[in-house]
Picture (cartoon, rainbow, N blue to C red):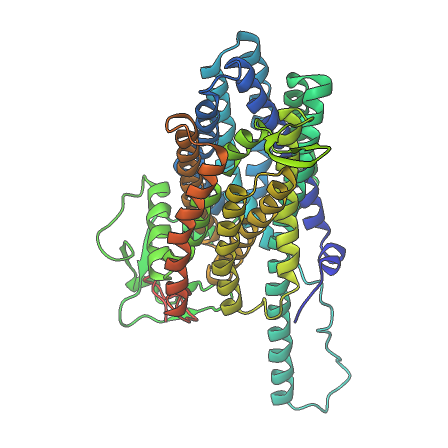
Length: 520
């Protein structure tokens, strides 16, 4: 079964409400992102070391996702996800106003502190945001109506029809969930394109502080919209997660493994044995430690480690792109045309650096959007094998993008290869998330997505520092730095290509998670 984006939005009012909140809050974040870069450039007087300062800012925005995301995943799997998001939106609104204080005191350390604090809130927020999406999506399928007047059907026929209806319903639910994840990431691409462009425009017309105020307002509006969504959004097995122990049956007890969320029920409670997933016991006073340990054991037993490093590898490549784009915006890339033709050795731009940076960031967002939309036209996207192929080969697009940015200087070429690179990174980001969702149980998905997001942002932060170091300490040009990242891609892409051909990327097929956290 396949569904369209229109069917997804038409049948899922709660998801549409969530999507409106997501667009608002992240549009404000892009306003702050552009304004904070401009603020840092002003505080450093556009000096030669400004790129390193900017790379530190980008790293500080990413590091909290590494340090705090696992904690956010535990909160996501133990608390109401909607309430968590509303509370964090309100905290984010307050923090965004602290940028004005940093601007008032002209303090670079204060800018770093506020950026780190804002990203910490985002790191806790992100696992709940990702994990709530499957809970907001419904198929709205009313085709399972029974006819009570038809008494001539045999019971076996009725059971067969009921099983077929359940299979259809499950297929639709999976397709709707995949579309919802893709739609959310497409929305991010649109926000990146238009939010960054509008942020640059607001900085030019109204000043830096106006962006911070708008970010605060967007957070508040997001929390109000989320409050309109009714219902409870706890993790499905929250009652078991809060028990603080793991129960193992004795050989004489029986349990029924349910295939919908791979939970289990112990029927002989008198013979339960309290222990950890493998050995030892965990104190009852440390529920977060219990859930963290359970999540790590789940990732190991479910063979999800290779999937977790897909996004990590892609982020190691594209993480330096923003720093390199800032450097590209400050050099002339338009050949001077004379009466005798084009002089390729002389370049001059009529645009300001901030305008070129806005165009490059807009190209980044449009590349992410176009890459994802083109990928959606491919056949068999519901099959995991197709998804893994798409993720691996998309890394080649990132490589080609950096290679073109390093070899071709004219600004239109730079825009084109930015589109190519962004398209590849978007495909890896979106469809690796879809693969993880397919192979993760609902009650564990918050913790799995937190680890995935934390690893990716760790890699992205490290890549941003590499980019700033290459530009400032090794005095590389933006083109040379782009070629270095292309060289790094020539190492990473063949590694994943070999892993793909050996068939070691996807987890083994399994149907049931038993009481030890292992899979058949």
